[in-house]
Picture 1: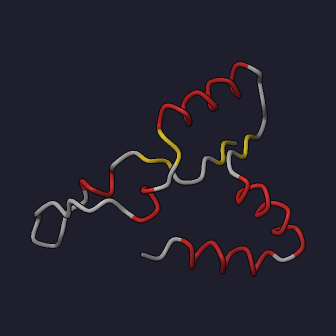
Picture 2: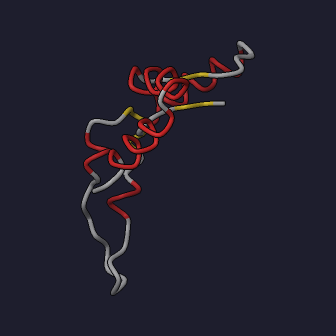
Length: 84
């Protein structure tokens, strides 16, 4: 299982408005996200080392531990973190 966090793919800038025109805006999540090449390198290393689970961000690691004791809090925090 791979938990990469936000990866800067540029996909949000290629999203469309309701009328079919490009938004051209980069999501706030992608601005400080992990570059694609770094994410790919970490995934390939994990596969080569037969890792069962890779959490790539500090926030992700904290979230996994918090989920054990406060799952509803983590769900709410994650939901709010994805709102634009």
